[in-house]
Length: 389
Ligand code: XIL
Image (cartoon, rainbow, N blue to C red):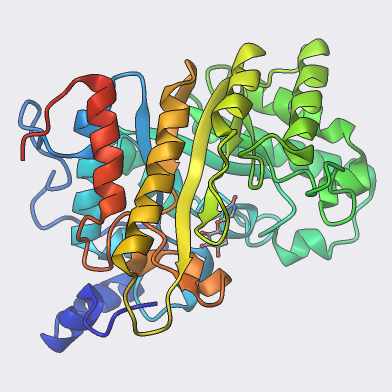
């Protein structure tokens, strides 16, 4: 849902949009254009802007965002955001202390053919994070979605599939060993009723539920320092699906499987009430000795095309973001809070949820919304820091 005068449209009007397009076409996949001023992404140490989310956050909580690229972006009328949009990169570096590649580490993106690896864009995200002193959340290794055709349609024996998964996890986790803080090892492995996805998840269907433990073991071998997570949507509150994770995690821990974290994606909608039992849910995993995290929060709303949200809608959205952050802050080892994109310009929501949008904390013009201020005020209250603009 792009406003007629979004930043890209405005740039097109003044004839600047073609430059990044040409640049993107001429560059090898994943290469980032050299910033106009080297190091322009980051401020010199000691000169951090003191009005940003990352600056105001308590030291034991990273504030993350997805890094736009791949997936739905490929079908949008703009060039790759991460490599082309300098203003986007500036905000990405300034506001956030953790980055999650939105699609760049998914199977279909990383491995378009069985023996063709496309690491460039993922490498670029990790390098950007290092330059800007940001954590990275790796996403994701064992999932039912966004797998390449060669895998989903391939004619593999169980032994071959197992070897393919082991090779994948060993290669990908090993490549970034010591540089990725948290990995979503298993993503969305349960149905809403708490049964395992035994039909649409190729790994569980073909190899049985035991493959989940193996995926964690292989990831841990490849990077013993990374915290390994199970991650899902619809598990914010206490319900059949989060109960299934609670049982699974206890089972894995009892077997000595290296599982370290439970995370809720947090794709919320103002159509539904806020999951008021989020804190209680995170707490029960914390009590098992796990880290917890909010990994993909956005709060979508119904806004007719061409219109803007009402003040009441924006307040409700701000309240949901604030309550989710407060729940995380209240749980000792909830150490990471990530928004699934920070600008409406690049959000996946309008593409996937018809009629819904405006789900992120900044407008398409990178204006800070009430939701942004709700997060920053909540962080300031928790850290005792004073925002200085
Ligand atoms: C979404 C991306 O945002 C889109 O760009 C892509 O087209 C589809 O996937 N749960 C997840 C994320 O774990 O990987 C999904 O990301 C959103 C839901």
